[in-house]
Length: 300
Image 1 (cartoon, rainbow, N blue to C red):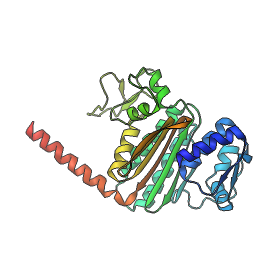
Image 2 (image 1 turned 90 degrees about the vertical axis):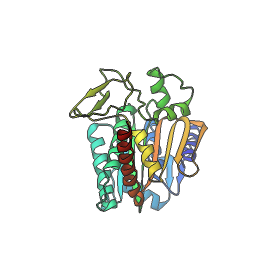
Image 3 (image 1 turned 180 degrees about the horizontal axis):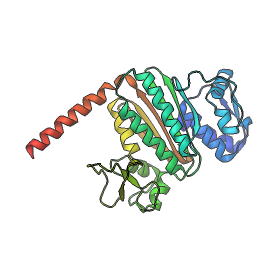
Image 4 (image 1 turned 30 degrees about the vertical axis):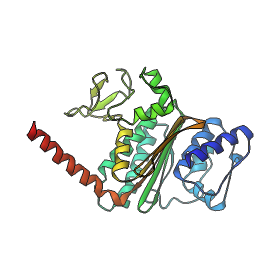
């Protein structure tokens, strides 16, 4: 869907013809919101079926994009969906994280959801800190799945890595693949508010020696959102799509792929679909990791 939405958006910008929406997923919603706000497009750029229009109103799409009042009551917010939230301040990022945590609590019925909460919170932080422009998030539940998407119109992965003088980044797919590897981070300036920070009592530093890390009791932002998200998706048989520039990558245990597109997205789009019935696989993987660690310690 990301590829088709990108094509529709660029076509609408070039021709000034409205986009007809008969169905929307979370990735469509955040891409529409970020793109329309960035280019200051009028409401007439969208034409939608009545049910889709009502849904967009419920999740506060028109409120966030064109500052129109929402007429539908949000009775299921925090239970079946997280409304569209513009990530333009720390308060908004906290609101988004809290709302999605409520959804996960309701959806998982007492299961340990801390690994997912940590990953999603980190991802939302990264959109806020890296976007430097317009960033949005939305989430939707279709039991047993939760789908969430974030999009920003900031610099994009390649520009960030180029500015950080990271070697070997020749195109947008290179940048995506670099960013999803464990321990990779473009942040390293000592005066950067979002320099890597670990809990003050942390014994495990996952970063290479050339990455600046500060001990901090308050800001535990670790910059590992994408690697952890990929790990979570693979362990629970989920799906993850990442778009930056003209690079599109689908991470899945079934039919993964990557492609260079004709159209370009300035910034980053991330769309994730998780099956909550597979949470037990996280625990099984964690148990095996503990066993492997003990064996390694015993064998020296």
